[in-house]
Length: 205
Picture (cartoon, helix red, strand yellow):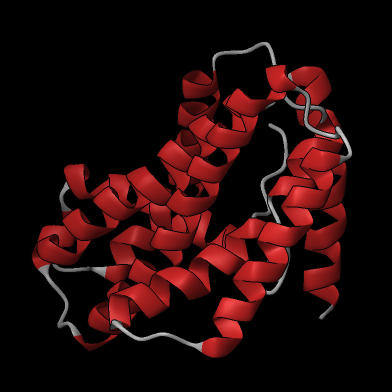
């Protein structure tokens, strides 16, 4: 719980920091640097994991969407939204997780449907009161794309983690090419601290 509180505090301060320091920088560059640093930090652990090449390739694709593409959309939204607007609109991430899980399982949950209606009602209140100006809508769309990327990655990672736990070690994991899988691994370790939180736990570089 202490780690979760610490991550939540960092997450809370990150909105203003990103808006002031990173909003004018190319989001693709920032996302690349962030994940590249994570890859370097977790590179020693990758050698010990010795994951099969199939799982590594899947993890690379997952990381590219959940943390690469997501972070590009997320940072780009700051060009159109104030910091508090970004913080407000990230609350949809948990909702997307449960709705996508229902869609994947081909089921309909009444509880999830009620949650979706409440979220839509809350968003309607914000719009009606004029909190979202017309020039902000590109940022709203970008941020929801980021939320969807992260939500889809959360669901897929659960399957990938189960497959990795049951897979035998592979010598292919010692290949320099496979070292790049530490990117999604690093980001996943960071995100696990805030799985019960509002959505993501990125901190400005």
